[in-house]
Length: 310
Image (cartoon, rainbow, N blue to C red):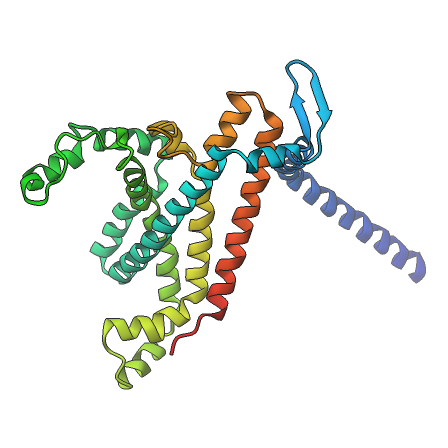
């Protein structure tokens, strides 16, 4: 076999081997792409498509109506109320859980064995099922639950309500759900902050201490906040998206009540689709909610980008 033939034979073997490797790689990632297409991309595009239609598949009553679904949703007082409700919820929960997560990260940011064990225990609510957690908190906020048992000795001192079913009160139902979600999500963001704290070089902390930066407030202002700005942005964006997509806890605990006190956009979307069979309005409300999330995310990123500390 001459040199040219040998080179051609090796090239053929090489291209065949590369083809086999490529086909093997495609075979491994094909199930993931099929699942993404079936459960993510196709539902998104199909929802956008039916948002412009009167879509009633049960009676085969489907016809194009343009932007009518979007206008109907935007003119619906229940949807506007749900948006205001979830914005209020988001502001309170994201603010408290971000500061609480940072405080917990500072508290457990050491290598002591006891700290690791406590950190694992604190993290347990973050990996619990939201539905199971919600069922537990139905008892926690019931008249005979943990909250009323805890505040019973302080009722006369602070004028707290006795034997109150917090989840049936238009005043306390939403704050109760807020407290539950802060308790369950702050540990998750604590882990993100711990990763950020451990990425800060020790030389910076030592140099700052020599320059007189010793108090907790000065460390936060001049070291932690500037160096954890990206971490804080990530925590706030994830918290914002999670809060605006609030559904399962409200659905399990209050079903949007009492008197729509805990009514949120995903409850509106769910009811329009599966209670009233108005799928076009449900799809339109989903994309309006997507636009709200996108607007808040871009605003938040711009805020953190431009904010400076003197």
